[in-house]
Structures are given as C-alpha cells and as structure tokens.
Length: 170
Image: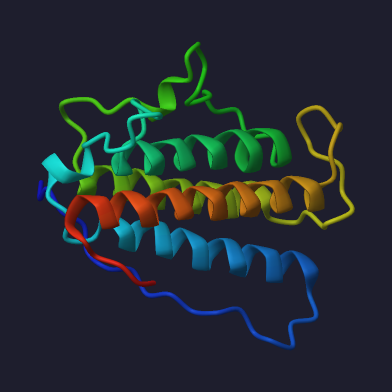
C-alpha cells in the first residue's frame, strides 16, 4: 500500500441551505476532505512526526486516526446506536497512537470507511431526535460537537503540515 494519500474533492455547502442536518453534515464533509488533503502527498515519516513539543503524541496521522474514533463514537455509536467497538477505549486515549502498519493511505481509507458507517447510522434521524445509545443528547448537539471537534483538529493539521514540509493553504 502506498505511503501517501491523494487529494479528496472539497465542496462548500449550499449557501441557501434549508435543511439543518444536511447543512451540518455538508460542513462536516468539507472539513473531512480538508483533513484528508492535509495528508495528501505527505511521506509516512513526516505524517508520523510529532512536531509540537507540548503535544508529544500528536502527529498528522494520529489526528486523522483520532477523528475516525470521534466519528465512530459520537455519530455511529452514540447518535446512531450502532453496535461497534469504540476506537478510543483506554487511558491515555489510544486513538492518537500510530502503529508500524499505519500509512497515510491506510489511515485515510479507514477514515473514509467510517464516513460510510456514519451515513448508515444517521439514516432516518432528525436534528431533534434523541441519540439512540443513551438519549442524553439530541442529534443536533452531537453533529455540532463533531463539526467543532473536526474543525479544531483541522487547525492542528494545518500547523503540522506546515511544520512538516512548509505546505500551507486550504
């Protein structure tokens, strides 16, 4: 398997969107594509580098693995009620850890596979519905939480990519 991943098409959500949940999921998809594109063309050794002294476990590959775990837990398991194993059970949170087998291409493939699980898990839910696992949240809250968490980590990816090879931009 290749050590690099390729660019993913990004599209801004429709500016006159009327469907709240669809709009939030379109923003999430835009952020997902941005995250994936931060790994595109990055050699494995740069993708696994922990370049922030104050965050010694944070690598670009680890961020995307963590985002996969976030979507699994919040969107598939909590909101959708899917019977799937959590990807972050343990302390410290193992979703940040990169294994010898992880490559940019394999981590991106796992992230994209999670997107398909999310779509299936959320099918038929509305923003006002309570989450299927514990009913402690609305679907609206969970999706907004995942959008904000993804946006925050895309910012981390911006910095990590610039430190890795100088690439800046979208």
